[in-house]
Length: 378
Image 1 (cartoon, rainbow, N blue to C red):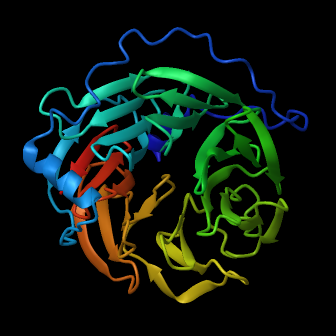
Image 2 (cartoon, one colour; image 1 turned 180 degrees about the horizontal axis):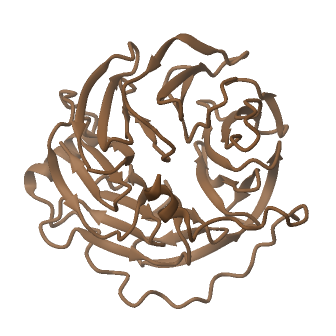
């Protein structure tokens, strides 16, 4: 637990006794100078070995791989000086990987480049960065963190284009699946906000209580979304996972998960009507995403550990596998339907915090660790 305390010691929210927060006011675009050397490498795929490039292009056109499970380290990416919270592949430019960490930094990696693999170092946040998402519009990312902002960044230029200021630490962001001009943010004071990038304003707000938001996820039809909250202070299970009606701004259910454990990660299956929640009880629970949103009492994904770390999990793009990080530094691969453990791969000495399948190559997985490592396994 010392690792957890050290990482968060300078990033705590000390405003718990402040008055009820007002609706956020969006400031003008940031006037902070660009970092000294943000463009350290190329984001182009021209320097990628022919075999990798051919595989990327072939599978982008609809060809699938053999579905092997990743098992050996392919690329080690060094650049973060503190814990890394998240990794995400770009779906439009599948040779690029984004990572964000407690060192205030976002790195963009040209993973298979023969030359400089670190393509961009983005230092626009002045506190720990908790989440990063690729936009489907152009070469840009959205990030958020402990400086109470979400920031839209042009990756090609290495420049910040918009800042969305809040009155709470922003711990999670998620683009609307059908409209990349909209995104959800969730923060330390329990507010969930739907932002419209075009006007730079909040268009809807959701609030159930002051518990910090740990994760958000849209359902397949995007008419609802799921939120996970940190309810450990009161040890009350109600409101830990809430299903929201996005248009009416009301909870459809707030008693989905009745155990007194926090869930740092929520993921919906790519095609089927269920979602999973990573529980601090050291298992991944399964829930129906149709009313009454029941917990599956007969199946769960077990064997890995959470132990208070913000451990994430993700489905493969075909929905056949689920992969999870673990507090023991291993990556765990599960059959998504049977929940059977397929393989366990040792990745780090410290906790593996996030794992993400490549969008087109099913045998490739990116991961990150609490010690600051980013790795790609094949």
